[in-house]
Length: 315
Image (cartoon, rainbow, N blue to C red; front, side):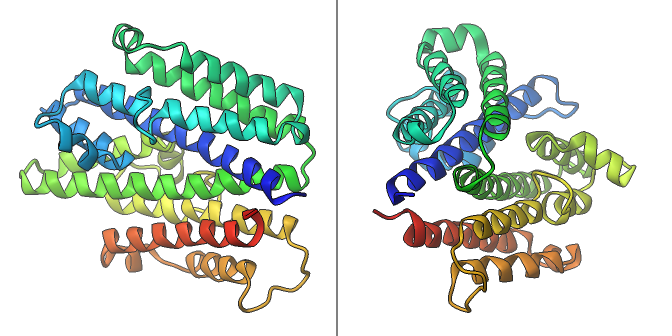
């Protein structure tokens, strides 16, 4: 396979996953401010959304105050923002077009319809419809596209490259969500909002990863920070945990690798070492300094993506 095609497949997976996580986080947190049991300020929520998407500094350069409609427009459909949902889907569609001959017509059509749906939105449409409905449509279409990836493609190198992008992006997004919410919890502690505020933020964190129900099933108790961190980082059976995604990255790499044995300086060896280390981590080790651990995790995931691009995707 040409590196150009491999690059398109990989980034198609990444951009689709990025759009879905951004939409879900924005939906969960924006509406949490409307029915929160605590007097959560809208500014607190808007800042959390901007922090998770990496847009806080960019926004505050041009605006002194956080304005609902402006923040929503920035993260959803602002074409001048390279990290907006709209631009993520435009890039996903462009990469799918570049690999058109390798993917099924059903997958291409689902991505193309998704692209046209998002590009039909204006700022006025978004204000009228609201971020809840917009985000729902994003997540529904992402589910359709993911089903086409899994059910209409051969599970060969093409599928593996798409899933490499998907799992690298998912692991990095979960790490970013965790960082944003731990930061929110630290802010809530400084404001002396009490233990109830921490528990509420843990619920928002789990819902942002569609993990709330399964966490309660697993622990059989209400969410707390320790269990939430353990579940989203170390649970090898939950599809959005960091450990699970590292395992899937490793499997996909071995599907596209031409070597039977992992050499010490290879990408496969590097990923295998990271996966093994995380498999034997305990939550006590993570709790020593959660933010430092999460930033280190994010850097490792980014390094995997960079090494993968150098080895397989540069053309």
